[in-house]
Length: 389
Ligand SMILES: Cc1cc2nc3c(=O)[nH]c(=O)nc-3n(C[C@H](O)[C@H](O)[C@H](O)COP(=O)(O)O)c2cc1C
Ligand SMILES: O=C(O)C(=O)c1ccccc1
Image (cartoon, rainbow, N blue to C red; front, side):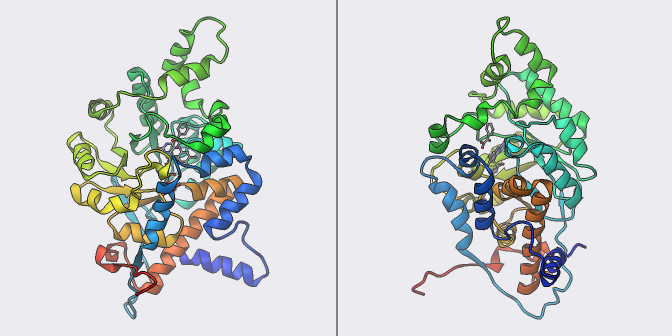
């Protein structure tokens, strides 16, 4: 049983000794600190989203519409935040959502995040887009189980190769992202010319792949930028459909988790096509910009099937984690916050962000009287009344 509140106590004691934490505690400060160190175009890439970014803002604001009812004298001195996911026990209910530009945000960023996963026990969902190979990333995750996120390429052999490599490397599951077969309309990136993506920095899983090397070799001899050109040709799979999920189901015996589901109908389809889990997510508002927050979609996705539903998009604090759990999420993904921690202070920054979020979740459960995750039920949440009420 882990009491993550001890971490907060640790910061308090350090503060009592006159030391401040290395990173700002609240998300806004963290983002501002990242502004200081990241070049503006890359910062725009990470911080930005689709269209007018309304969906992205709503993802965050949706949490403020719910409040947790405080219960007293219930004996919440010991909390248990551990969860079972796909047959494994994890010490806490959070995970690191896949982010494809970690190596551009910080040198060896993917490996630093993997090391933070190793020391915190918070699983890393390692992106296909990576500046280190999936094998190197897996090794750096140590004893913490990890998951491999696949962007299905437009070449079935390459898809199979990446999945087989992830199996051989010891990943505990394959996460297929289905909402980004083409990039959304992202004004900040369109304005900057998509510079971060063109650095070719995050293509190590491709460069190291025998099938990808065959595809590069098929380019006209001496073609400049052959790797980037080949990648641009296979990254997106415009025809992506449920039969691709069937093929992936055939391709691996690992748990198959579909990321990017918001509609209950799609959750049912995922189940029909053999998925073991779903991630209810709108990609942090970077893709579809229809105006629905991911949190609003969560209850119906949870209700649609018996599959475990994970959640991300808009989580900024420990209280957000608790609310998503109460609305039925089995585990909750952290996105931009840990990327900012990485940017500012490497693996130690990621660790501080994760431990801070866990400490806040743990303390909220303590002071509001919810000792176990099973106690976090939808009835514990109430709609926040408007200012006039
Ligand atoms: C810079 C950046 C890169 C991302 N790259 C990937 C990726 O490679 N694969 C993926 O499935 N999702 C990717 N995502 C989406 C995240 O996994 C996650 O869904 C999203 O960040 C959650 O929203 P939040 O950051 O607002 O919490 C990326 C997000 C960001 C911010
Ligand atoms: O930016 C993203 O959200 C993302 O998923 C992605 C897509 C292509 C390359 C790198 C990251």
